[in-house]
Length: 230
Figure 1: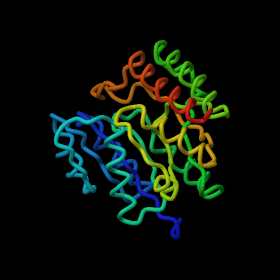
Figure 2 (figure 1 turned 180 degrees about the vertical axis):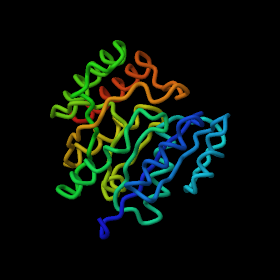
Figure 3 (figure 1 turned 90 degrees about the vertical axis):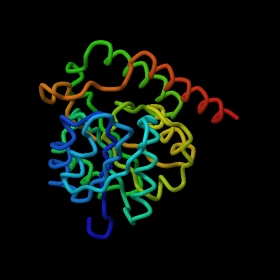
Figure 4 (figure 1 turned 45 degrees about the vertical axis):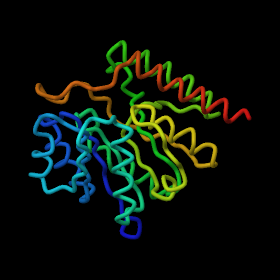
């Protein structure tokens, strides 16, 4: 991977109890880690700085999508050729990172999306049904089936991100990038990852709201589908 350096971006909001371990374990595979502190009101940024990481500090909470976009800009500006994203709350296991790196070596132009479907029984019931709803509509809009469209554990080629203008700021952004990528003929591929919902006793609650955020994601899908039909 020397000719194609990868960096990791961890968007973080009130994740002081988990972000330190996520950073340390991620660095075992990807030495360069950028933490985007999305207006946290706890010690998230302090903990991240103590792990000797690059920090993007957003003064007030703007949403995961906005945090990702800020991280993307910094990573690409500093020469990263590929960007891996994972959450700060411990729901993504850094031990799965080699799966992404291997898949990226095979196809350096594809967007790689983590799939938790091999362990679908570990989803909380409401999250499972919101996930399946999103998968159905997003796959229809994309014109191809994706096993798990909502997983934030991903790897993006920097060249792809440069070609895609992103406008959303919350959980819709990860759907927006897929829709815009397909319109440009960019390949999408799934990578198997673990499905974790119990990281440690103090892990922060996910900020994803299954009903509300799935609705907003579907609205982005509808807008993208209508544009594709034009």
